[in-house]
Image (tube, rainbow, N blue to C red):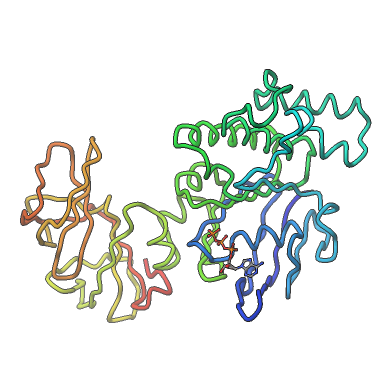
Length: 350
Ligand code: ATP
C-alpha cells in the first residue's frame, strides 16, 4: 500500500498562493514525473508530500492513510534532492547506514541492507571512501542509496540529476529506470528535463501557475495535449501556433489556408491551430510560405525558423535539403498532424 493521493491541496507563502487546488492520485509502483515552468510549485508539492511543509487546505494520503498531521520521519517517504548533502566525515558505508543507525536497526540488518544497496548501485568498491574522493555521479548514487536502504513506501526526487554532466545523466537515467523496475516502489520525480520526463515516467503531470494542467502517459500528453500550455510545453522546438478562422471545410489565417479535418466538431469560428515543427516540412510546395530567418542543423536533419505572415514558424527539413537564411521556402504539414485549440488556448478541440 503505497499510493499517494492529493485532494484539494492549497499552499500559500505569505500573500502568495503557490499551489492553487491540486488533485492527483499516484498509484502504487508508479513513476510519476512532475514538470512545469520554474516557480509553478513542483518542489512545494514534493515538500508537502514529505511533510516538510504543511498544507493550508486539502488532504495528503499515503497508502490510504491521511498524513496531514504526521511528522516527516513517520511518513515513510524518502526524498532525494538536487544537492545531495552527504556527511563529509563519514565513509560511504557510514553514509548509507546512517538513517538506519538513527532508527536503531540491529547491526546485522544494517550490514545486510547496506551490502544489498551497494551491490544494486555498484558502490561495493567505494564503501570505505569519504565523499570528497567520489565523482559527482558516485556521490549521487550514494545519495540514492541512502534513500533506498530505508525501503520507504514512496521515493520523492527533486531534480536529482541536474548537477551531473550529460553523459552521466544518461547513465543515471538508465539506472533509475532499472531501480524502479527492481524496487517496484512508488516514485514521484520533479525535473526540467523533457527527455527524463518522457523516458522515465509511467505518467507525466504538467503544472502551470500552481494548477495541474494534464496528467497521463507521456505519449498521450504529447499526442493529445489538453490545452495550448501542455502542447507548447512538451516537445522541442515548441509547437507552432497559428490563429485561423474556420470557413466551411477550411481554416484561413494570415497568408495561408489549410483543410479542416473532418473530425473537428468545434463551433468556434476563430481557433488556434497547432503544428509541431516535426510535422511541418520544408518542401517545394506547401500552404505556408515565408523567408528563412535562422537554421539549426542537427546532423541527420534540422530545423528552419521561417518568417511567415502568420508569425515565426519552426519546420523540419531532411539531411539532403538545402536551406539557408534568406531563402524563400514553402512549408507543408504532414498528414493528420493538425492540432486545434480554442482561441484562448484553454481547451483542445482536436
Ligand atoms: P523550480 O522548477 O524553479 O524549482 P518549482 O516549480 O519547484 O520551481 P517551487 O520551488 O515549488 O517551484 O516554488 C514555487 C514558488 O513558491 C516560488 O515562487 C518560490 O519562490 C515560492 N516559495 C517556495 N518556498 C517558499 C518559502 N518557504 N517561502 C516563501 N516562498 C516560497
